[in-house]
Length: 166
Image (cartoon, rainbow, N blue to C red; front, side):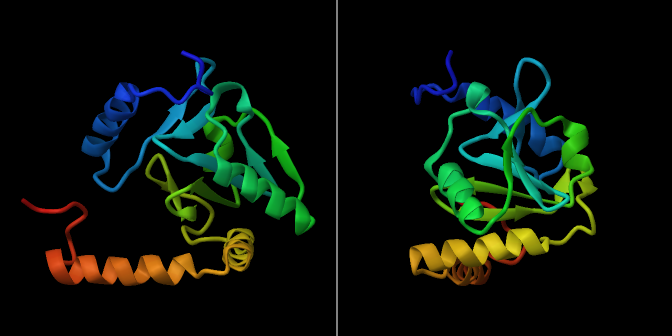
């Protein structure tokens, strides 16, 4: 099935999530393409930062999201070089920083890959600059909004809860 088609069956996303959870309950899966390159997540796109350049998988094997394209455009406006290329797991493990983009969250730092910290395990400065640019672009502080929502969820369901309880 062509990855550019938004079709209803997302069974492969559910399978990927089910495979990731037993390994690390906090993990979200990053799907590989047929050649073993990093492709996309279960509704989000992936980026790494290496030596000041932004790298993201080519559109060949992903659904190129609107937030992905917006991030590319904002980065280029900021003078950041963007390369769309095949990204191997090795590249993510050795990145200076990483993040994902999705319509629901705009942009979120990634601090671990396959259980290992990326760089020092904290969001990097390039990610921070792009987050700030996103907030300016939207005229909305989505980071503060997410923090308020997380605080509300923790207060309601307990600090250790990731999913709603029945």
